[in-house]
Image: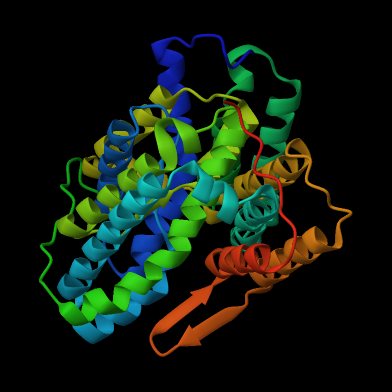
Length: 402
């Protein structure tokens, strides 16, 4: 089916629910890791996504979900300052996004082209995908049979199916995996039976803490850089230049306000979800309305206890099988960025930058100074930016649609 063909509202709704399923695993896993209810994370993910779409004029097809980059800092900050104090630090992180948004607007697109050329952006997008690969493998390894059923179903649908079926490979993969899980006895139905029909999210008010704010602010560096990579990635998938229109300053601001609102409600920071970008790349559905339906669905699910219980009952192996495909799709977008931008990979300078970004990002390097640490995608991106600025010669900017 041609992704440019207008979709009916029922089809958009089905696709919106499918994209939420893609983001669901990580969105509810992060709050569980930091010790809060998944329902509040679902609620603020939905609200945050709608805020992002409003600020970006409804042009960018992204879904905002719980950020893994903040798990360790939130756990430690909660131990040191309590969770209400940590929430004030999360709000401050959102304000940092706003400040960076103002800087980008002040200096203009030329700053982005200089700091983030294709030789940096391409491998950073690859790192975004491959650094998440271990998460998908870990989830799939819980039960490889179920993971393979979900994965192979999605592959068969996207390669051989036609019409509407071709647009929902992830949804059908999860359905096939879930049905198989019932037969193998791997579904925990108590999560459904014990859930209330209606259950409001557990909101919590923040308390002001300078210590927590100072502790949390440096953590914003990594997801900020990851955000830029995500904007290039979704732009490459959609064939549009979102860095120019609606502008990186708007996408950063949308992400920041969504994070600040989440903190004010007792939830965790939001970030643009690479999993959903992978799903969009797979289905070729780039209509932002579909992602807004995902957001509204997340809000509805957050107050419907039975629905949330059903989603939580999906075995991790089933979601892991789907992740194996989606994370690889993200990495392939990074390779495509290098090719489309005609990056000269025969040039020693570019080989050095690409190599170091990949090894630092995928290898799990960490730099730590006291309470501040930089690792993974953030460290890889910072390393690539510095090498590009220091090494002689210039690299080509990312080639995107006008």
